[in-house]
Length: 291
Image (cartoon, rainbow, N blue to C red; front, side, top):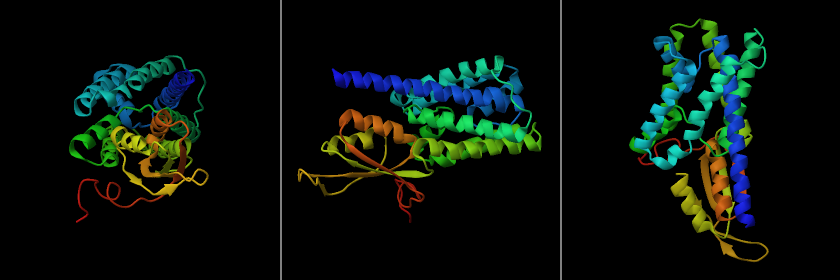
């Protein structure tokens, strides 16, 4: 009974985190980025372009693009992945419309100040959303879907998509608005890493659990990360087991914690910040030879 209760409490906390994180992201766009005219990356930036062409409201354009991306992700990756993105994909446009219609605060006309406010809101919001185990959705769906189908680099596809969106917006934007928008993205990326792992880049995880085989299968099958089994022995009970070493991107930390907690609530987990990872799956493709 307690296990089921704790599981429900955990789901409730994750849902609240997702709502708070999504609200902060929507506030960043609705209160600062869009009113100030800064260029925006991702789905919101694409929606700005679509709105300028068709005249439809920004929130409606965001919703339409998200629905299209969800359909693409369903076809390319499957239902399990989409279940983690659908909530944010529908809640974000609703919150964005709220902040656009009812600005709760008066934002300063100081563009540099607005840049840091927007970057902080967007970075913390995205970090909280990822920490909850939810996916931020958006153009991530394209990158992850192409990676699953064609083994393309997720980071490369994301960069191409964001640069393309910014270039298309830049045609109708002034140079300061372009530069402020790019600065917002840099600040966002920096803060996301701090919120999720207190550091940037990949993370190293070492897991000590007597149910190491179940944990190993879950990491491989559910998170799609590589694992290495080490040889270990507990110091007190002298029980032999296999610690699990894994390197993974910071956005998978929340989901990793949830999975391990369900399998073995007493598992001992060490998470370290990693600044550089070289080798198969990192500096070159997981499925190809460096030669």
